Amino acid sequence: MGDGNGGGILYVVATPIGNLADLSGRAREVLATVDRIAAEDTRQTAVLLRHYGLSTPLVAYHEHNEEAMARRLVEALAGGERIALVTDAGTPLVSDPGYRLVRAARAGGLRVEPVPGPSACITALSAAGLPSDRFLFLGFPPRAHARRRAEFAAVRGEPGTLVWYESGRRIVATLSDLIQVLGGDREGVLARELTKLHETFLYGTLASLHGRLERDPEQCLGEMVLLVAGARAEAADEAEARRVLGLLLPELPLKKAVSLTAEITAARRNRIYELALEMRR
Ligand code: SAM
Image (cartoon, rainbow, N blue to C red; front, top):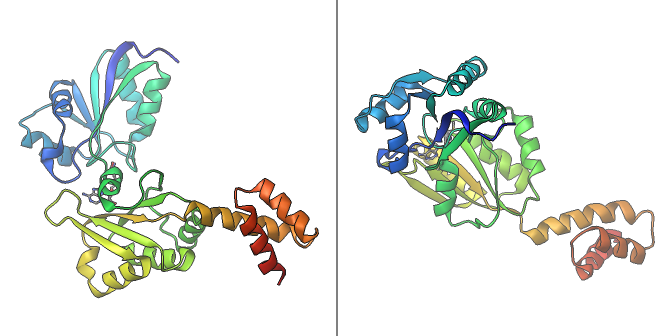
């Protein structure tokens, strides 16, 4: 690995997720002065450039040519070019192309500079009103029903807020699966069309959100981020205590099973004792 000081510079530039005014001053400056812009969809980025009166050359860099294009762009960077990487909206690499290019540039000892700005995940989290001290961003849920449910089951005990991107075509099915796996009482927020004319935040339990979308299909239109309150840390500890007790209780006296579970898990000893009595019964 080099120190990143040779050759050109790869700028990873965040662009607006709706409102074109959200392009940062530095992003505009970088897009105006680089040798070229590697864009996920050149037509889409051309709209942004036109809005800001820029005419920097564009080159297509997307999931279908990522590998070959990353090699070519790294060669150009090594030759001293300054290149900006953008995607259609938001921050590159966040459920978007760019990882291979950034990785290859770093492996080649080239300089990579972030030019931060909007991302739908953080934008939604910042205004949803769900706990934000800890969150887990999961990108798009798997499309296949069984894999989707398996993913939801894997994060059932996660104490932090869960954040997914989802398409309007699948949101109702996704909510149904979430209700099956996490229960209908969990709090959720559907953040739609952020920074755009029809920006909407729908709040409620997962069951009420599901009902709302079924009654009002217009709420399935546009782009959306789904946020779900995490299991409280205590609930997660309790689930783990139940699991451990389930293994130990059949093998050991109750007191011994309780004290071992208290050592293995973060659950409170009194609560473990109550759980053990309940499970014995
Ligand atoms: N890299 C982007 C970012 O940083 O936000 C995300 C790209 S991902 C391919 C596109 C998804 O982001 C959409 O399907 C939607 O779930 C979410 N998204 C993008 N813009 C949005 C907006 N204005 N409002 C709500 N969700 C948005």
